[in-house]
Length: 211
Figure 1 (cartoon, rainbow, N blue to C red):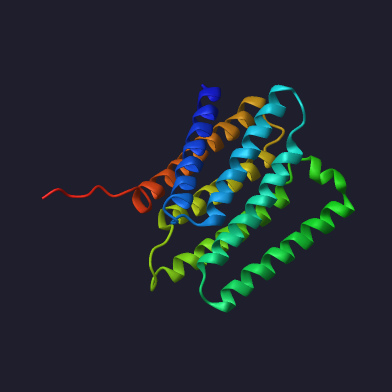
Figure 2 (figure 1 turned 90 degrees about the horizontal axis):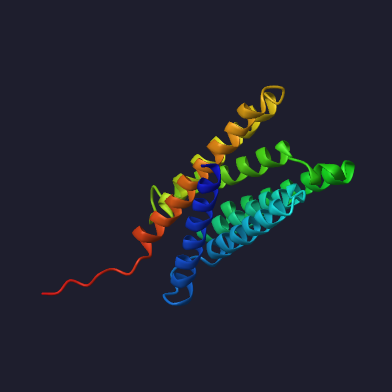
């Protein structure tokens, strides 16, 4: 059952990437950073799956994905913001976060090869802050990527809480810890499905009415 959920997640993600790529190249509508984010997610998910099947430690790819996600989504929100102060906040926040993580890795390089909860929390909270700023902007502006914004806030907050709980309960049974991964996989399906709905609502070719 868990394998089915995982592969369903991959299928929805791949469909998202194909559809948004089509909207970007053929209709010039989709945001370039958003397409890059979906392409980066596909590449990372595929790479992690291959390494998992070959029984290789893929946690360093998880860390690359988490940091890359923060950077690309930060640039995505920066491209949506119109106020210079908000753009400046995004750039400074990304640089500070990368500096903090860089110092952590220099002090303990092994953190890059582990499941880094500090990194997950820092990057997730930062992206959520960008998303909340976008919500505020949409009160007076066009609702661009509205449904995605809902999805990213919900997914990042709930997944971070799940990982924190899983770490705090690391002494419990393996079945209980595995449950947190199953729940996160379900959340991913919801997240990627919201992205798919965003495409259908905002970018899908509209049918012309025949008089």
